[in-house]
Image (cartoon, rainbow, N blue to C red):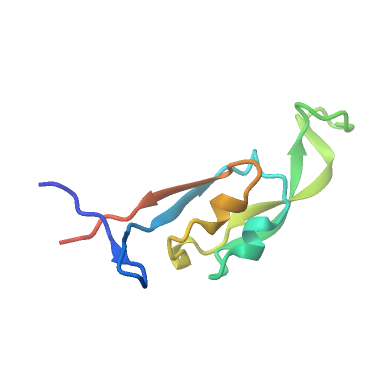
Amino acid sequence: MATTMLTSLTRGGTPWTPTFLTTLEGRKCIGCGRCFKVCPRDVFDLVERESIDSDDDEEDWDDDGFSDDPHMVMMIKNGDDCIGCAACSRVCPKNCHHHAPWPVKP
């Protein structure tokens, strides 16, 4: 049996298949907040996270592989509120967001 994906129509009557947020690559995120600002449904949250010290010249005082200077990154706070507009992907300079269509359950 073939899987049917959720589809809708635009106001003009054009078929549209929304793609919903599935994952966010936190390691790529630079914490710019663009996705947070553009999201109409409060899906994201800015949180403090220690940065990976692989490409930075920041000090790592305890040799754990993480910089000791924290920075803000985005995380998914409420993915179930995503409406499938994918606006977050269009504004992200690092392509952190992954989306997929949603299957319709019979």
